[in-house]
Image (cartoon, rainbow, N blue to C red; front, top):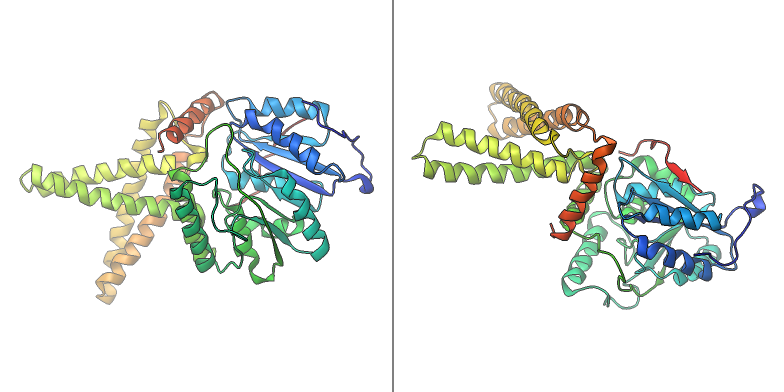
Length: 409
């Protein structure tokens, strides 16, 4: 597909793009050419570039974009390998932009490219820092949403506004335009693991940001599968908790702690079942419950907390063994710290709380260093990790400097 009005690249400042559109993708080969064509039509009077950030889609999305880029120099592709996450993809694309104004939109055709024009006009006329395409500015009813997703979206917006003190009608919008300088300033404090980057940016910028809004109608997805699943909702909860704690807690630690809380439920449930089945043999019941909780925590952390470093294949059992060993060290520190504090103060709840906190921190650090970093995915297993992602989706089921991305033209 050849887009209209192909421009010749130039290093002249006058020929730099006015606007960069960043499109994060995963398995969007059927949509990406269509949306690039619509962007070219909508922004025909303006200089622009499109940066597609693809998480090494197994359906060949990158190859489609590479073909487009060969015929149109305004299109660029960043293919990420070994790194996952919607927010991280958007951040990498925005930092790679050549323009001061950057927009983020989805590739699933639910964000109408024609809306970019009034967003750009509002940005230029009012000198806003951020312009949001809002689904709720005029009418809170979003036609493309199911009743369940409408309820989730409304609840999420209310939570974001209340907990993060964000003043906008749609802080969870995935369609927005902003000044790149704002992103550069906020980038070291943004989470790469979440899926609602805008809420993170607005919470980081606070009341100093001048925000504008444009109403738009959220369209239906034409092809492909929605990326909204249980893991996305989990990431959203993690983001809210981390930001509500004034950004002191890393999002990955919050995720690890939430999984640990689920592990406590698993532990108590198994303990009750085993006590009943084994005639109140506490030692055996406690042992089984502990191993069961550790196993559940390992697999949940592998799917949720360390999704971008997920262990697959034959390394799963070895990873589980090392995880149990690291958690044993955390349990020892938990007991030791709790004992010392209780001996010194006699306050049981303080001793217990401190022990749990130290144990969780120890487990987090040790497991990160000895489990997921030790069993890094090899290139030949990345395909299997992608296939696991697809299977999970179909069943419903700390920003550093990124490694140099692969750019194809």
